[in-house]
Length: 85
Image 1: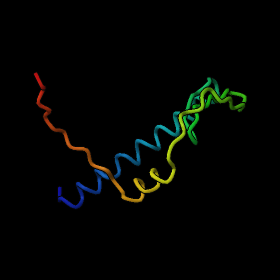
Image 2 (image 1 turned 90 degrees about the vertical axis):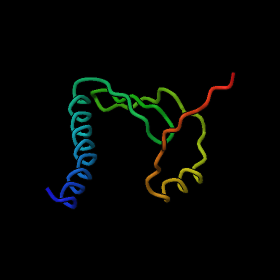
Image 3 (image 1 turned 45 degrees about the horizontal axis):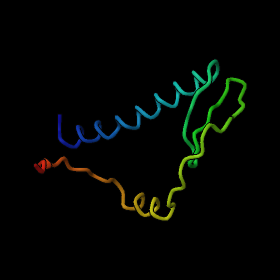
Protein backbone atom coordinates (compact mmCIF):
# COMPACT_ATOMS: atom_id res chain seq x y z
CA UNK A 1 0.00 0.00 0.00
CA UNK A 2 1.47 3.36 -0.96
CA UNK A 3 2.02 6.11 1.61
CA UNK A 4 -0.43 8.44 -0.16
CA UNK A 5 -3.22 5.84 -0.20
CA UNK A 6 -2.54 4.86 3.42
CA UNK A 7 -2.69 8.48 4.65
CA UNK A 8 -5.92 9.06 2.71
CA UNK A 9 -7.46 5.95 4.30
CA UNK A 10 -6.40 7.12 7.77
CA UNK A 11 -7.92 10.56 7.19
CA UNK A 12 -11.27 8.95 6.34
CA UNK A 13 -11.47 7.15 9.71
CA UNK A 14 -12.58 10.21 11.76
CA UNK A 15 -15.17 11.11 9.13
CA UNK A 16 -16.59 7.60 9.13
CA UNK A 17 -16.61 7.53 12.95
CA UNK A 18 -18.54 10.81 12.99
CA UNK A 19 -21.12 9.40 10.59
CA UNK A 20 -21.58 6.29 12.75
CA UNK A 21 -22.00 8.40 15.91
CA UNK A 22 -24.52 10.68 14.20
CA UNK A 23 -26.54 7.73 12.90
CA UNK A 24 -26.57 6.00 16.29
CA UNK A 25 -27.57 9.26 18.02
CA UNK A 26 -30.52 9.68 15.65
CA UNK A 27 -31.57 6.04 16.07
CA UNK A 28 -31.46 6.13 19.89
CA UNK A 29 -33.22 9.52 20.02
CA UNK A 30 -36.32 7.92 18.46
CA UNK A 31 -37.04 5.75 21.50
CA UNK A 32 -34.92 7.11 24.40
CA UNK A 33 -33.77 10.41 25.85
CA UNK A 34 -30.31 11.57 24.79
CA UNK A 35 -27.93 14.16 26.24
CA UNK A 36 -25.72 16.42 24.15
CA UNK A 37 -23.84 19.72 24.43
CA UNK A 38 -24.65 22.69 22.21
CA UNK A 39 -23.81 26.39 22.47
CA UNK A 40 -22.49 26.17 26.02
CA UNK A 41 -25.37 24.14 27.45
CA UNK A 42 -26.09 20.48 28.21
CA UNK A 43 -29.41 19.57 26.61
CA UNK A 44 -31.70 16.55 26.88
CA UNK A 45 -33.85 15.57 23.92
CA UNK A 46 -36.84 13.35 24.59
CA UNK A 47 -38.23 10.86 22.06
CA UNK A 48 -41.17 13.17 21.29
CA UNK A 49 -38.71 15.87 20.14
CA UNK A 50 -38.92 18.12 23.19
CA UNK A 51 -35.57 19.65 24.18
CA UNK A 52 -34.86 20.49 27.83
CA UNK A 53 -31.86 22.48 29.09
CA UNK A 54 -30.17 20.49 31.86
CA UNK A 55 -27.32 22.85 32.72
CA UNK A 56 -25.83 26.04 31.36
CA UNK A 57 -22.05 25.63 31.15
CA UNK A 58 -19.67 28.37 32.34
CA UNK A 59 -19.31 31.24 29.89
CA UNK A 60 -16.65 30.65 27.27
CA UNK A 61 -14.51 33.20 25.53
CA UNK A 62 -15.88 32.84 21.98
CA UNK A 63 -13.15 35.05 20.50
CA UNK A 64 -10.46 32.77 21.94
CA UNK A 65 -12.32 29.69 20.72
CA UNK A 66 -12.48 31.11 17.19
CA UNK A 67 -8.75 31.89 17.22
CA UNK A 68 -7.94 28.34 18.29
CA UNK A 69 -10.25 26.89 15.64
CA UNK A 70 -8.75 29.07 12.91
CA UNK A 71 -5.28 27.72 13.72
CA UNK A 72 -6.32 24.25 12.62
CA UNK A 73 -5.27 21.07 14.37
CA UNK A 74 -3.72 21.42 17.79
CA UNK A 75 -1.15 18.76 18.63
CA UNK A 76 -0.42 17.93 22.25
CA UNK A 77 2.91 16.39 23.16
CA UNK A 78 3.45 14.07 26.08
CA UNK A 79 6.23 15.19 28.37
CA UNK A 80 7.73 13.69 31.47
CA UNK A 81 7.27 15.89 34.49
CA UNK A 82 9.87 15.66 37.22
CA UNK A 83 8.26 15.37 40.64
CA UNK A 84 9.54 17.90 43.17
CA UNK A 85 10.49 16.32 46.45
